[in-house]
Structure formats: structure tokens, C-alpha cells
Image 1 (cartoon, one colour):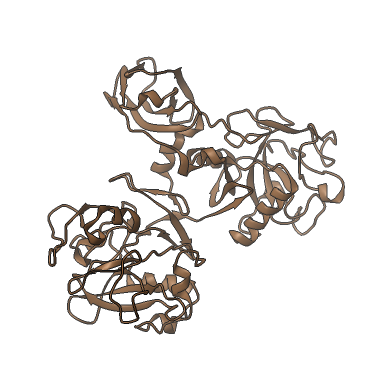
Image 2: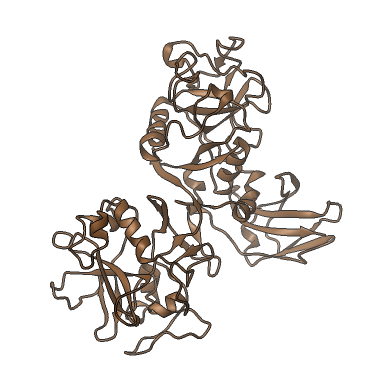
Length: 509
């Protein structure tokens, strides 16, 4: 069975957020208001895949401009907040920029994200196939089908919706849910996005827009307009780790292109509500390997692992670190899991065998004899999928797509698997408060939703569980921390299904 218990390391959610870059493809949570946004990797850029929706709605009655008043203001189509929920806010250029003028500035984007410049839009367009010559042109006669690619189901993942604009002379227009005046007819709808770049005319700035009528306008229009139009906004990540998401047999998977040790990869997987991948049959094996090579397009020589025969690998959730020779699917690194193999292959002691006929794909299996695992030189306690035959230049011990045991402190990319009920998108977080924080002895936990909490864990920054209690229908909770060393700890709250629903950092003085 797949792992369903996510414990201990899950609390490292905070250390991941504090010390690691954003994994592009993950859900971005805007800490200012808790809103969540899908993200997508396009070439070497990480874009929000939804329109930004931050700020207080300003009712637009014809000429009400957004102003520099220390409050982020937005227009919502037809002055309806629900339209902002569906399509994001509409912002005038100066409000979007927060009254700065620097290219690619943060503006109204979340921390760690910035507004796209005209050049950054061009970079994305060229990644979609537009020539550099066309990208530098203005108007709608640029490229071929890049405008189609930006739309929902267009293939890029950008997922542009036709949320319309606010236009001083025409009011709110072009939203797909409302009839609009258009020179092309009433069945045309549009979406417009600002850039940070000034145009050639005074108080004009470059934008992009695409049209719903892909049969007649399949391209991306680049032009400039006066600052007071209300357009949609997308943000770009300042720094990020590329990742690739896919689905197989009703499960979500993520390939993370970040070099981590096996333990750190498992901690990152758990922080997202998943675990390092567990492979149970040949079809799943084939699907995952295909996505590694053809989906995520990981180069077969992106890294060289000397203790693995001088080739590249990607981490799996297999390990025998708890008991040498007893291989578990333990992708959350909690020392429990399904025992699928015991012993060593023919290149080791030769006593290896599958447990209860469970699936395995150790090196040499496709040739009829499992050569791996062999614990060569000792300390090879984690399983990884090979991207070439090994030793390098041969297939003596295994071929590409087969598994090898390597030292778990090696640094590799990795594959995360999510159970349907534990996908990061399904975690129902609650708000709670801890006081005093920092503390020297006792802390109190308060929340209006403590009835949802079943288990409370206190874990050190190293991932060691120092305290656990079960609770039910209480108004507040008190925990004694006086016996603990000074340092940083984390409180984790779990519901009755053992799903993380709340986390908070606490400092012990």
C-alpha cells in the first residue's frame, strides 16, 4: 500500500519555506491575504498561472482612479468582488507598480516575486516559438499561435482567462461572461496584461493581450497604452527551483530539479504533503521514467555519482537505512513502510529476494539477474532510478531506468508522489495562535477551530519529535517547554485523518 502516514518530518515545512527557494509548479500562497495561485515553468521563467488578486475593491463609477494611499486598490469587473475571485483584480499601471518606476520591480506582487518587463514577456514568447524578430515587433501580427498557447488548454500552462479590462471611455468591457462592444463582433473576448516597461509615448506602457477568437487572432498583441487602463497582472518568481508535475493512475507526481540528499528530498516531499515516490508495478515504473526523460527533460548526464558507477540518478522512496538489507518504501523517512525486498543482488552477497512477490526493478533485472542492491563499499542506503547504464559506458550492472542503491548523502533530483487525499491542494489549514512566543516555559495554543485537531506534535528544527499529545474538543491547549534546550521548534496540528492542518514556529529562550 502507498504511504498514508505523514509524520515527524512534516514539520520541516517551515524550514523549507525559510531556507529553500520556491519550487516552480507548487502552489504559491500569498502570505498577505492567504490567497493561493498555481504556478508554471515556461522555459527558464516561473510564472503565476492565475491572475493576481490582491487589495481592496475600489468601486469604479466612471473616473475613480486608484491612488497612492498605502492601500492596494483593485477594480473588480462590474464592481463585483466575485469577478475578482474568478479573474483576478484589474489594476492601473501606477497602482500595480506601487508608484515606483524600476523595471521588473516587485510592485503589488508577493515577496520573492516581481512584475514582468517587456523583455521578460518577450523571453516567454520566444520560448513558445516566436522568433526574436517578431517578438520585437508591435501589434498583433507577431509569431504564429503563441496567443493560443497562453490560453486554457493551450499547452503552456499559463492559462489566460478572458477577464476583460476597465477602460475609461467604455467602462468594464471584454469579459467572457458579459456581452461587450468589439470591432470584431460581440463574441470576442480579451485578456490584457501589463508590463513594467514605458512605451514611446508619454505616460504609455507596454502590455500584452490575447483574444478568444483563435481562428482569427491566434497571436499575442504587443502595444502601449495610457497608465489609467485597468488590466490584469501576472508575477514572476525572483528565484525558484524548476519542477515538473504530472498525473498517473489518479495520483499526482512532481519531479523536482533540485539537488538534495535523500533525507532532505524526503523532508521536502513531506513538507508538501507527499513522499518520495513508491513504485509498485511495471506500468508505473514506465510512466515515471518516461516523465523524467521526456516530460521533465532531465539530461541523462546532469550529475555524476561516483558511488553509483559514474552516472546520473533520480531519488526514489526506497531505503534500507533502518536495517541493512531490509528495503522499505519509506518516502517520508519515518522508519516505517512496506518491506518489498531483502538481501543483496548478485554483485553483492547474492541472497536478494522480493518479499511477497512485490515489484522491484533493481539493476540487472531486465537481463534476468538482479545485480543490485549490493551495498558496494557500504553505506549505500537509498534507492535511485538510473538515467544510463552502469558502470559508466556499460550495462554490466544495470541499464537506464533500473534501480541502484547509492549513498544517501549523494545529491540528486527526486520524484514526489501525492496520495489523492493528501495532495497539497487538499490540505485544509486552520489559523491558530501561540503565546507567549518566544517562551521560557509554558505555551498556550488557541484557535476557533481546535475541534478539528486530533494530534499535536512539537518537533525540533532537526526533525526530532520532542512531544506528542492526542486531543479532542478542547478550547485551548497548554504545553510545558521548560525542560527543552533553547532553540527553534515547530508546533504541528493534525486532523483525525493525520493530515497536517496547521504549523507554527516557536522560539524557546
